[in-house]
Structures are given as structure tokens and as C-alpha cells.
Length: 309
Image 1 (cartoon, rainbow, N blue to C red):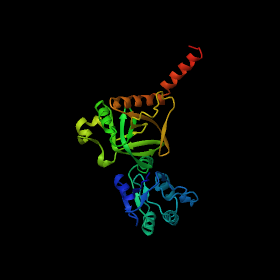
Image 2: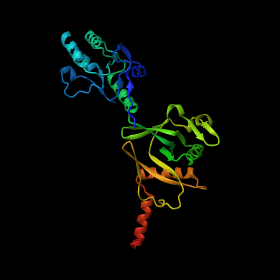
Image 3: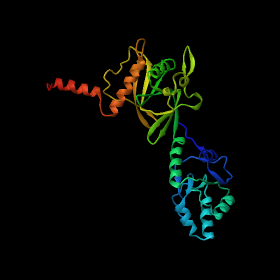
């Protein structure tokens, strides 16, 4: 698992922010917390519960309050804030910057930015973006597809037939998200999967080589991101191993502290793996909606044994 950081200078470029003052750490400072802070309480000298790692944002409410202070009081408010190692201070709504703010930012060598967005819109967009970029991330070997709206990751040893099954599923109208390497991020209690930029839309088929799915099958055949709903693990058929034939018990795999439903599909010649994966995806969706065919059958068998049918 890896945790990411977003450079302040990259954030400035992505959000088209105006730079009023470049701090000494402008090129190296990182945003590491997917949240913001509006320092209203800090302007009242309350720093008992203050996270300096958060991006600081002031809007109309804070500016209106600061206008009622004297120049010396305003200077103290900004000096106290800039004493902390904050990544940057952003002024929203294209509001005028107090001279005391610029003077203090220059003196303490802190980054001062401005956006033309209203405060709520800027904070909401920033938090949503940071939640994705800074989410815990892990890379898993497999193929991720969108099948009937279910995000299904096919895993298994190299050469077991993952990519071949994926191609068949794509030809049936399902969509490829990632092949070989699947990047999974935990965002708001969900696992979101995507492909590394370098290999996005590509898939490898032994005997043919690498193909571009979007170029061959069109944009309908690819999807940039999908929620991971289940894992299907391919393994070579082992005649000495017992495979679940009823599916009464649910099985899960832990990925980034989230329990994901999983099934094991034994592979041997003659089995239509694409069809089996399709059925697994539909069955998983039915279970989420509260219907379990295996349990229904077991209840009927129990009722017959008890003489109730």
C-alpha cells in the first residue's frame, strides 16, 4: 500500500490559482490531508485543535471579520497563522488581499494563493479531488472489467486465461478498465479501480501480443474507472480439491481493510470462462439486493425433509 501526496505547485496548476506570493517551499510542499480548514477560530487565537497540514482557505465570512479589526490586529492574525508550517493559504471569491496578509506571507515565506471560485464550490471541489488523489492505493495483478454494472477483477497465475476471458467478455459488450496491473484506491469506504496511465486501454494476448482495446472495439469497450464489487480467482483444476457446488457460504478477500466478495473458478479445457464470470457478476448483484439462490434451495430442501412441502 502507498499513500500519495500532491505538490502545492501542481495543485495550483490544476485548479488555475493565482499566486500572490511563493513560499520558500512552493516547489516541495505537499498536500497530504484530504481536508481543508477555514481559520476563523484561529483568528481568535484558538490553536488548541489545529491541523497545520491542511490547506487553509478564507472566504467572505473571514474577510468581513478581519475588516473590523485594526491593522495591527490583522497583522497579528496572519503572523500567528503563518508561524505554523501550513502548505498554503487560499483567498476565495477573488477577494482583495489585505496588505498585512501579503506582508506577513512575504516575511514568513509562506505561499499565498487566490481563486475566483466561491468558497463552498472551491472547498467542495478540492476535498473531492484530494480524497481521490490522496486515497490509500494498492496495485494488484489481474484484469478489472465492468460487467452489467458490477466491477469484477479476475485474478490468477500468469497464463491461466485471464486476458482471454476478458477479450471474450469485451466482445459480448462489457467494458475493460485495467489489464495486468489494477490500481485500487479506498475512497469513502469504497474500492475504486483504474489502470496505470502507461498501460490504459491495452491488453496482452499470448500468441498475438499487445492490442489497444479502444482502437479495435471502440470507446464503448473501455471504462476509465470502476468500483470493485467482487474478485473472481482463476486456478487450474485440481481433481483432489473440493470446490463449492452450492455457494451457501459467502467468501471475502480483504483489500485495504474492505471485505470484497470472492469466488474461485477452477479452469480446465471445455469450460466457458466468460459465461461463468458473467453469471458470477449477476449472482453477486442479486445477493447484494437480498436474493440468494443457494439459501432458497437449502430452505426448500429443509422444508421437504420436515414434511412441510
